[in-house]
Image (cartoon, one colour):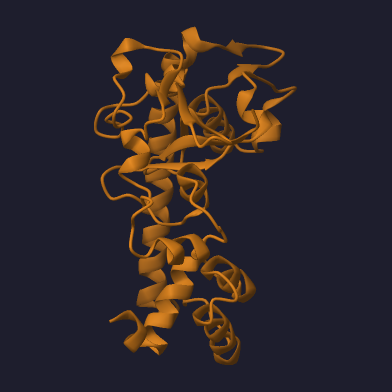
Length: 265
């Protein structure tokens, strides 16, 4: 029996810009409309996280430490609470915004820029490199020329669940937590120092009248109006319209709300 498969990676970002690979999630749908969700947690990464950042994957008892959690012909809580259901009134509009013609809830979750407010988890598309476990580094300079850049690079690889091999040392799952917490403490201290230095520089610039803050990205009104008309006519999606203007979909919608408030009432 023929089937279609959609695969994503459940991720989490922290306040320091590090991305954690929480789990692999796969949706398989057969031609008779039966389906199955498979969620494979990345425990070496999950074990790094404190409760204030990660409270679990909704609907799964991670204390069971299963390799794969399966939901056959049943939509997992994780998917149910953050994607539109088949009876959603504006379902077609939500699908069109993501360039989709029929509902595949995992595919929609991968494509959308909308975020669930209940937690910080999101899903990106799976790539073959996500299944690799070992990253070989000939030298740390590939991560950056400065020690802070190298520390952050190693942290990011650890947060993605990789085992790091270099000519001089190896960081495997047994050493992951120790190295992670050591480097994170150093990285936090370095970042705090850099932010304080930047803040002091901005204050000096303000006192000298040289600082005016960041300017919002400029958008040609004629181009925005043309993109808006195509978007409202549903000939392009919000993502396509935003891309044509060189901005994010969120920025595109903010500009539309200012120019066409009647459409957002």
